[in-house]
Amino acid sequence: MSPCFNTADCHEAPYQAFCWTCGCGRASFSSSNPKICVVGSGPAGFYTAQHLLKARQDVEVDIYERLPVPFGLVRFGVAPDHPEVKNVINTFTQTASHARCNFYGNVNVGKDVSIDELRRAYHAIVLSYGAEGNRSMGVPGENLPGVYSAKDFVGWYNGLPSCRELTPDLSCDTAVILGQGNVALDVARILLAPTKMLKVRNTDITQPALDALAQSRVRRVLIVGRRGPLQIACTIKELREMVNLPDCRPEMVAADFEGVSEALKDVPRPRKRLTELMLKTALETPGEKEQERRSKASRSWGFRFFRSPVEVLASGGRAAGIRLAVNRLEGSGDGAQAVLTGEVEDVPCGLVISSIGYRSLPIDESVPFDSRRAVIPNSMGRVQQAAGLYCSGWVKTGPTGVIATTMNNSFDTARSLLEDMDSGALDVSSTRPGSQSISALLAERGVKAVTFSGWEKIDDVETRRGEVSGKPREKLLTVQEMLQVARS
Image 1: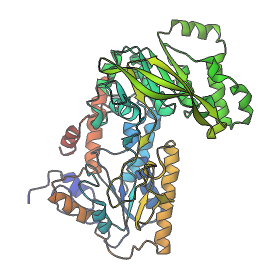
Image 2: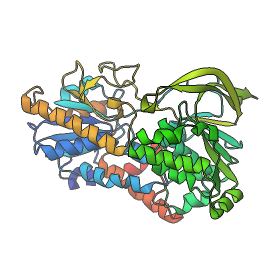
Image 3: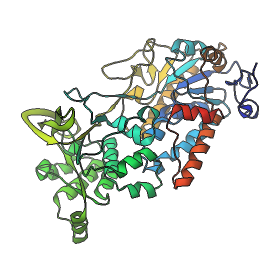
């Protein structure tokens, strides 16, 4: 057998259950302990693992991740100019470093190893792999050059390897974003923010994206929603950032806000504060200082309400505009429905970004999947008609909420699993091999996992590269680069 090329992984990490490099084996875990497998290392996966490890002193948790690096959307989805949100990585690192937890990156569950093989190796599996698909707009022209999903656009500026080649064309004046949630506002802000602001605000935006944005000609962004101001999905923090964005002025349609002031008395306080800020921005005459700021701004943004996409219009084989249906609302509050009026309007634009939601995908034919709702059918995280299978995060609930929401629903799943262990509904009396049997299967298939110490090498290289340019990190942008560093 060849000598292990990563001695630290084998001999200095006392809780490493198995050496994935040379197979030397260091079974410091008890073979009789309950063994849980978590698929996906984003917030849902880590929060589930954290709760399991805290609740029981005998549970062992292995986390499998398709990419060589952990943390999912905290790394690849959170806006780069929101570094404070990424502090949760410190908590996840503590979980990954726990004596009864192991991380195995570069393992594509459903391809490198099947769910059935994992079920034979573990007492329970928690599917926490998120939502990597895009919801389709379902309109003609959505596949034209110049049309992108927000998921891919965010992945591009955040360094997601699969989005590295996106190279969006930013040579147009006007961009239209479909959707009015926080991701839509993140994209609008990144498109319009002065690049010097992205440089000095401690961001980890990728250098290729920063270079492209520095050359961008986008000066106007319209953020389109099918319903009205009282149904908008963003938070007040995101809206306030847009209102205060340097060198940028709001561009609203006053008629969109008719009757909104009168309806405010019946809405919850968070919604009321958000709407009041919109009303102030759209309708009130600003003070002298703000007027001067707006008059000097070279860029603009605005909400467009009561509009749904009908068709992406083409010119010269690429997106040149978008046709929007004009809606009216039936009902009120969050339950209000958009109804077509029969009117349409065309908006010239060279960039269309669809931010209408992420979508989970089926992972393995043995796992039930509701293709209409794009979730794994479950009851409190228990996968229906599949004993020993659980789910947490967006694959459980759909792509809703913030990190705190994901934390709570992941804790709920962990509690369901623990209840099943205590009641005997989940049999943990038999011995399961855990990662040791999976490692043998992956070795046969030529798959080399990246352990957490491998990730720490990547982390060290990225942070050192970032220091050179005054950034918290400069991300490695390809899986090949990541693997090379992890195995160095």
